[in-house]
Image 1 (tube, rainbow, N blue to C red):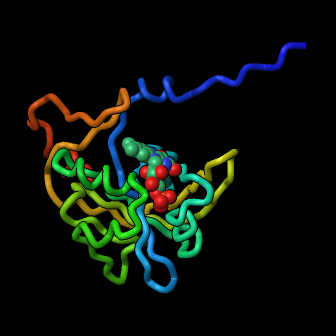
Image 2 (tube, rainbow, N blue to C red):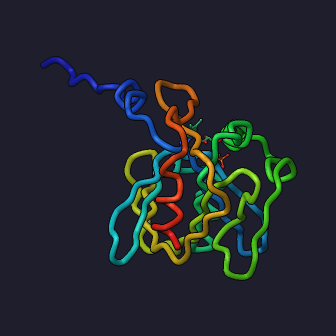
Length: 175
Ligand SMILES: Cc1cc2nc3c(=O)[nH]c(=O)nc-3n(C[C@H](O)[C@H](O)[C@H](O)COP(=O)(O)O)c2cc1C
């Protein structure tokens, strides 16, 4: 019998453009970790729940699981270099960006690169193959600035072509 061929899903997902996030977490002893991530997905409105899929073995995933939380930093269209930095594997990535983590933060806030940040509490991690699906309850959402999102698709970064006429919509939704 012929062996079953295993499809490569990367061309499929390349045709599914998304926004770009940096998922961040602090280890219990305060070391910041973070990675560029496009697998953010909305799961439920009530209770407000999202998921991200993080590579097994990633130090960022280890920090997320150890601390029980993560911050979702939604990058704006001027933050492509931040996306590249947090996808590079560079160990000193947090020395090259401005970040803050106040008492209520679930992970470092990239205050210059993000337009919106959500603080999330992990409630259900599931390993699926080589990734961990990390469900989390959203505890707070903060919009830092009204700016168009950075996009990723077709294996490259892009930006939103339309003018920002409706940008207040997002602000109204969050506040
Ligand atoms: C646009 C883009 C999106 C990415 N999305 C994910 C993702 O959703 N999950 C993931 O595990 N890695 C993703 N990566 C790869 C990680 O950003 C990269 O492997 C990073 O170095 C991991 O950080 P770490 O050293 O903390 O593991 C993505 C990379 C890029 C460029």
